[in-house]
Image (tube, rainbow, N blue to C red):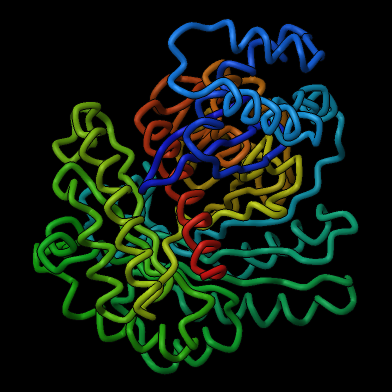
Length: 464
């Protein structure tokens, strides 16, 4: 499978199955779609392919240049870097039979929040249920479950999530202490992370987080007017002025590494690149700003009609990032970060985040769900910290959730980068986990294109 596109003056060719990316001149770019169907028909003879291409009318290039370009295409094919076969589809048949190894938990340490974000899928932290704080006893059982179900895996991840986890900070500290106390005896290493809106952040919390948290996610939507509109306190007043200096302190105290400022853009700020750049201008180097996922009835939801503007916005952002990198003002944008040399393992490429199998969410009272976005939907209640996983049918359904189980993914060039997208989004929009959220897919494809273009531009800068 080949995907070709032009971006910022580059002719980019992706060979989806091999993962190869090529930057080519105009004639090679034009020859690839002419050669591809011939190769796919099983024609191997170079002379036959050259003759077939030359027989096409109205090619705007001299014959000798066409022959040379076709030979370049065939050489890449011989090297396995163009028209590569799909070697992964049979691999997924083993997924259901694999031993389930739990690698990560999302601990809902607080089903409560001090903000009233308008797009919050957690309903101000309540998750379709009651307000509650996780007890140390429940959290301890969750960590014990993770250790017991992680097989021989050493590195385990625990994210303190909410609601707002700082509303239950003492229990966070107790659980970190407990986790550290059982690492050596069990040959495990916990990687703790924290997601916070920053309202309760103070120097003591920051000191502890810098010692124990491998990553900290800081929620902020960008410009003051955008942030305060969507992330107010319950009384309606904005939270921007309170959190910005705190977040700047976090970023500097962590040497601009191992954190993200994470925002959400909506129909209200289709010019979201300005929010990304605003965060960069505030001094943040690790930035993630993502599209809201909302039902069409929500006035802030992204509509299909918004997609062209958003695609253009991603292009604008990518070009500006190149300019800033050249000027010594580089920053990372999470959705443009891509590894072309290695990337994730095959299982990760095919099945994504591992929700429902390798990754589980735990409510304050100890119930297990496939991920934080399914919490509160009783159809997906898998068990609890006392009984373990009792709904193995749910686990097996998620085991088989992969790019080959989704018709929309099979022919999509981005499938090995997005791994089929979010199961929760698929369920919320289509009623099953093996579909795909169409608006999200359109934006994801553009992000992959921009990410690869940025890699090309970076390579060009290094050569200069």
